[in-house]
Image 1 (cartoon, helix red, strand yellow):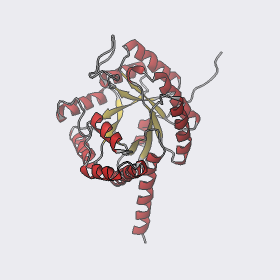
Image 2: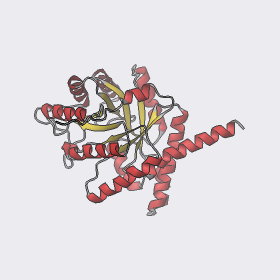
Image 3: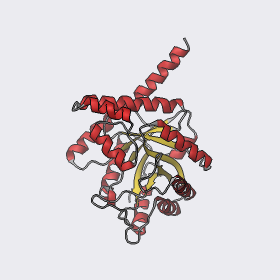
Image 4: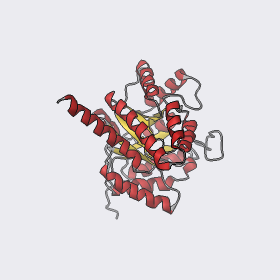
Length: 308
């Protein structure tokens, strides 16, 4: 008889709705090699010096890293992180398979799921619905809530526009439909100028969206990296950042420091605008997490100076 009782995670919605300060979360992705896994373990251990309020783990297209997603989630738990939120997508899964995955997540004690349609597998341009599967995150949210009503579901949003967007009004209607299906908080895709996020908040307010919204921030670690990712996510690349990264040239350390400084300035401004929290796409590295610590330190020093 198995007497093991799994840890049951706190709902992230509870953390957000009862917060006394902005929450901090990190996003990890499953490595594809043993070397990458060893590096991730060092990062996970090192980040205990900058503990977040919760962490998330991405899910490979077509389920390509499905088992690794849960392996990384379990690893994070062993190091003491929690809540741990696995991602789940519609890509490559039938509804029956999604029910099975939902049950596995639930049995392991995970109560938070980042609910996504998912990107097409590598080499495939357009999203294709799996046989017997789902076509969008809204339908996945409905399926998960029907299976386990106490799941806390996060959903994504694009401050500038989804790459497949048919317009701002359509994007907002769809976001609202995900909330109606059971989503309890929103995490945005990356943006590199905060005005995009603030305009997005204004649109959400006008649309009557009241659930917490976490800004997603990713440091530019190199010019090539941020050009590729911003193009993929439909995020614009500011000329000022482009010039700074160009000036760094082939100096990888200089480029990373430039990106972290830019990210730190973004976070300082966001925290001063009383956001619900900060979600950091840390790319399985320690240094990007320092941007939040630097921002916190700057704000604390500024407050001390103002009271002198």
